[in-house]
Every structure is written in C-alpha cells, then in structure tokens.
View 1 (tube, helix red, strand yellow):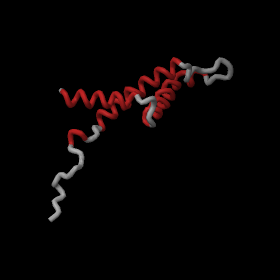
View 2: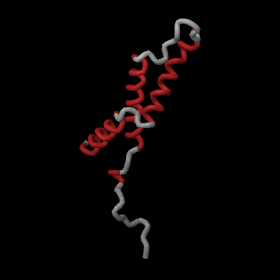
View 3: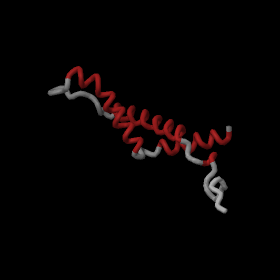
View 4: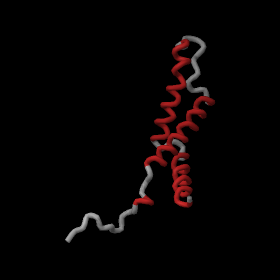
Length: 93
C-alpha cells in the first residue's frame, strides 16, 4: 500500500531551501546594489530640466526598487553566495 508520509530519496527538511534565509540574502544584495547605483550617479537629478524637489525626494525609492528587482533576477550573484554561507553557518551552529 502507498504511504504518502514515507520518505523516499527526496530532500529532508534541514536541506530544503529556507525562504527566510534566501530573502535575507536577497535583501542584503539589494542594499549593496542600491549603494553601488547611487555611487554610479543613478537617481541624481539633472541640472537642466530636472524634476525639482519631488524628484530629489523620491529618487532614492526608485534606486532601491531597481536594486531590489536586480537582486530578484539574479543580480551579481552575491545573494546566492550569502545564502550558501548562511545555510552553512546555520547547519554548523
């Protein structure tokens, strides 16, 4: 008879992906990317025909959202390395 609770060769709970760790790693990569984008000049208003005070106030939100989307789509690979390190640290501790 088939037992749905029986474990086969499937991954066990400790080695299953941890969404909270992965999200933390992705958030850290997004913060890093946001700082890099700011340093590269993304979000700075143009001197001529700029958006004024409104643009200056909301440009940081735009940069952060762009960095978050970059991290969600793979970014520069930092999140995966951080996730692996955090997983390893959690397994050892």
